[in-house]
Length: 358
Ligand SMILES: Cc1ncc(COP(=O)(O)O)c(C=O)c1O
Ligand SMILES: C[C@@H](O)[C@H](N)C(=O)O
Image (cartoon, rainbow, N blue to C red; front, side, top):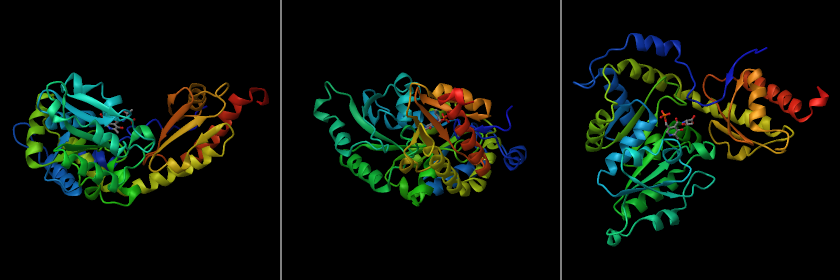
């Protein structure tokens, strides 16, 4: 019998709070295509200020935010972008930068901490003298935090070094900052300092911040003007978006201060899991709100068996592969949920590993 639901599938699963719903229902709105929606304008101004960029633009999703940014930077046919082989843009966005954007990806191995080796980045930059044969490198993409490395943070020093390489070669830098606020809180570095070297950033409102929908992209005035046209081309120009932006403004106010506690709850969960027989978690690598949990004895304990068993307790998780489960903590997971999850995990693992004992 399910006692409660603890949804650890992602930080995209949060429901709008009452304050968000109230703000949505009373939002001041107007047509954001024919002119501008006043609440959207307020959110965009706030995000530009927080990131230290000239301008900002609300977009329906992080995927569209990344696609628009890559396409604006790589607006010449034959362009190439350097990005991680395990980054979200390359793995989870249906290859949109190529299929829609016509941009060629040049992947570099993502290290365990989410970075790409600086030497490999510089070596991957095409020699302009070879343009008869090669695509032309125009952009380097980073991801902070890096989801597929378990929410690891890219340091400001690393980001600045990538920026120096880009400047040296006349390239631009885009940061997929879906969880940028998580990185800022975990590193103790302001958001605008963290992205200082970037020409564009895409920030999700609908992840750790807990807004129901949307992302914001930031950059120079001219960049955002081009991005606005491309957003319309891609069907992302929406009308009274103040309804959505009002919730995002509440999320910035209410949930940004909660990210630190999200990280503490994540660490508590990771440490508890790591003490269980047959489970392994690299606790030192848990820097923000994500946990990768590995099974040691894969003959008995598989991710799918554990997922199914946990589901019966109301614990929702997503297997990364046959022997790894990802869990993502968010502001609607309580400390009590963490303790409940640990006790359910203990029972589920034991039942799978030693069925005769039960
Ligand atoms: C690192 C990262 N970038 C981009 C996205 C895309 O955001 P959306 O789901 O809003 O398209 C996600 C996940 O959703 C993500 O984890
Ligand atoms: C799966 C991925 O697209 C999503 N961003 C998540 O982290 O849940």
